Length: 467
Image 1: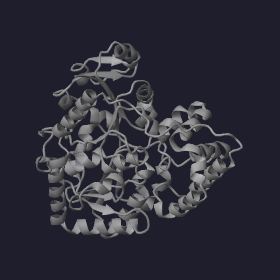
Image 2: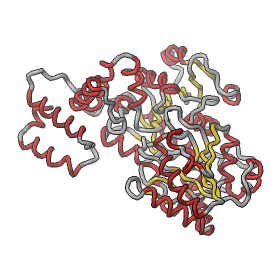
Image 3: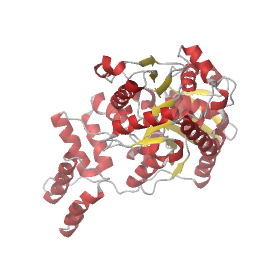
Image 4: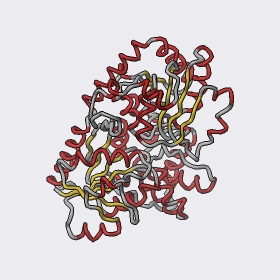
C-alpha cells in the first residue's frame, strides 16, 4: 500500500519533524511511503536518499492520478510548519495524526491574522454554533482574544478526515466530546533515543549506557552538583516562574544544586522580566541545541522537571525520552502528563500550592537517591512496554490498512449549522446566554454549573427553538 506522508521534517526545528524522522524507517517496513514537502524545502539527506520526495504543488496531480492509496497527515498548531498541511487536509481527506487538539492558533493565523476576519467568524460558527459566532464577533469588536483552549477549533479537520490517530486519552476524550462518532485510533508516542552513543533506537537501558559523569565532564558541570533540568522550547505554559521560585527556595538549603533550562526560549515569552538575579542564582540557559547535545544534558541530570499548563493535549516527546532513559521526572498533574503511571514520576497539581509541592519534591528527591533510582526503573519499564517504536509503526500500518479496506470516508456527525432569521429572538437568547457564561469563565467541562441552565432551556423549549 502506497502512502503520501505529509509532515515537517528535519532540518526543520520542530518536535513533530523529529518524531516523523524517527517513525519513517520503521513505518517503511509495513508501507510504501512517499514524502510530500513544502515547495522549495529539502529534507535531511538520510530521508531524501531513502524515500521518493514530491513538492506539495505536485500533489494534486499525483493524487488525481490515483498514485496513493491513502494520505497520512501530521498536524500541529504551528503555522510555520502546518499551514500548507492544514489546507491540504481540507481538500484531500486522509488520516490525520492530531499531535494536539488545540488548533486555534493555526486557524486564527490563517484567517483573522491573514486579514480575513469573516473567515475566522465562520470557523467559530462552524465548530461551536451560535455561541461560537457570538464570541468571535465580540472578539473582533473588543480586541480581546478568545481563549484557544476553550475553543480549540479541531472540528473541521476531524470532519474532513477519513480517520484520526492521537497519542493519549486526553486528546481522544476531547475529540470524542465534540465528535462522538469520529473514527479514531490511539497510538502512544514512541520512544526513540536516536543520537545517544552506543544505544539502539528502541532500547530500554538508556540510563545504564549513558555515563552521567562523562556527560558532566563534557558539559563542564561539576561532578558533585545536584542537577535539576527542564527541557524543550521554553514558553509560559511550561511554568518557568513556578520552577524558578521553587528552585530558588530549594537552593538556599542546597547551594550545590544547579538548574538547567535546556533549549530555546520562545521569542514570544518575556523571560527577561522573570529572570531576576535572586531567581537566577545557580541557573543556566543553554539556548537551542542539536539532538546530541540535548541528550547529553539529559544524561547529566539527576532530576528532570516537565511542567505544563495549560495543555493542548500534546504528548511530550521530551518526557517520553526522559522516562525511557530512566530519569526521575516531576510533571504537572494535568492532560496527558497525568496519564503517566504514578510510580514512574512525581505529579504536581496546578494552582494553589503548586510551588510548595514542587519544592517538597525537590527536597525529598534530592535526599533520597534510592527513590530516584526506583522511579527511573519504573519509568524505563513502562516506556519499554507501552512506547516502543516498532509497536507504534505497526499500529499506524494497521489503522491505515483498515481505513483503506473499509473505504472509510469523511463525514460530519452533526447537521449543518444553518443560518437563522434576525427576528428569531429565542435563538438570540440562547446564543447570548452561552456567550455570557463563557465570559464568566465557564467551559463545556463545567457540567455541574451548566446543568441548571440546560434544564431551564429544556423546560422553556428553547433547546428546540435554537435548533
